[in-house]
Amino acid sequence: MLQIKNITKRYKGGKEAVSNLSLDIQAGDIYGFIGHNGAGKTTTIKAVVGIIDFDEGDILIDGESIRVSPINCKKKLAYIPDNPDLYEHLTGIQYLNFVGDIFEVSAKDREDKIRRYANDFEITSVLGDLISSYSHGMKQKLAIISALIHDPKLLILDEPFVGLDPKAAIILKNTMRSLCEQGSAIFFSTHVLDVAEKLCNKIAIIKNGKLMASGNTNELTKGQSLEDVFMEVADHA
Image (cartoon, rainbow, N blue to C red; front, side, top):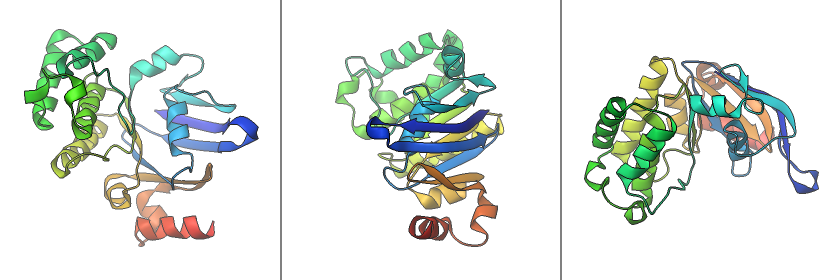
């Protein structure tokens, strides 16, 4: 579903934010992407969703290059950034309908999904309010719902649990599992290692833009906690 093939991203001065990174995320995977601040996680994610370009390599979404076919690729994915940048002059329901229009979601499907997810995340009562009045957590919930209403084949999330209350975090984790059971793939960054260990069937650890370890979660940890594995990589690799 998502192939990151030897991508390198350089910033001014030649500094490599991401260096020759390759990952393969398949349908059904919940793939955790972990690393310290500045490791290259967000740069990688922004390259995957087409926000920034990269210098070498390629990124394929369902077999198509994000460079060659950006529109086709973006139709198949949904992206939730760590700090949702929403149109605050709209109400919540106006924003969701706007996203539904972009992805050509039918009126019935849109209504059903908005009702279900808004009830699940407990924001139905504020959908008529301006987004500018929302708390960070409410904006995060709205961004999550907007990402789900077109049934993405690939869901990309950057620190999705930041700002969510415990109940919303549980609902999001259950929703992620349900999507993957239906054949979608999820690739997300997180600093919450215990969540990644319990939720993800695959993990990748990045340090200074370079892939340090990756694979099935059980094989990667080998009886250790993910926290121990991460600290070993962070301290000694």
